[in-house]
Length: 355
Image 1 (cartoon, rainbow, N blue to C red):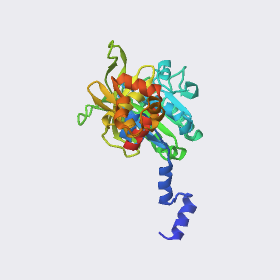
Image 2 (cartoon, one colour):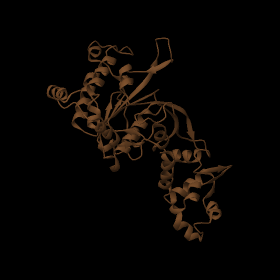
Image 3 (cartoon, rainbow, N blue to C red):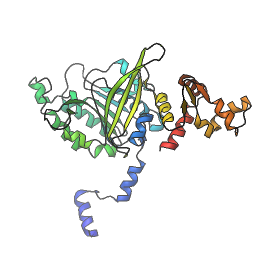
Image 4 (cartoon, one colour):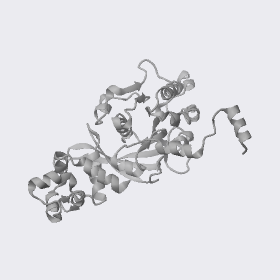
């Protein structure tokens, strides 16, 4: 295309022609924010700013906790202390949701809800549009789009699962905001329920919200409850195991990859348990019966240099170091890592291996 033609396009439509290398560099510079150790590996790093995320699952599967755990990470200084907006469509938000996520500052979250009337999908999404345009780098959690009801249906007092207008409203919203979200470096998380597939073809359950939402989402996760997480000693339930399946990821990741997470009640996603499992899977921690050895410290004993000196163990004596970092039972190993603040060292070893 000639320079004259390019100038004509710019004059008529504005500065819409951008060098491909510049666009690529902007994408490369987009910050990636972690969710949890095991899920980050499956995703290829976490969620990238300027993207849409869809979380799909049955009720009580861990969707809200996963979203809020991500929000807690976004509040950290290294990730820009991003403003968090929680769109409480279902109206089920409780103190348990906030108190049960470690690192989450509820005083810095803005909840979008109405206590006097049922808001329509148009009003909720109109508010989200204004929020994203006014707050660069924000994170908006919509919980959930399955509870949206169109204004037309609201006026006619239509209730139940029949919501013919909602998919079109969502489709229009996605189209309007498709270029705004990356420009603002915002992250929109759309929580969705599974519904019965009445078409009779394919899967028995499909994601609610219409096809456009699925097309718009850069990252799609399916979340499921696996089993109760119980203490070995007394059998008391302390949480639940989550199953994440990556349908697609903005970072590439491993499409179709599956990850196991541990949701500890009152704490949120248990990063340490996930790191332990990963380290065990990738031989950074080895197991032999009831005994566990921190092989990552045998390979690189720098993090325990002072401990070795206190015990009179030479840093090159691999046999003695191996005995020093060998423990009977997973809990004793975790206590050792806790007491000596060695989880960051394990995290770095995992990053070097996985990313």
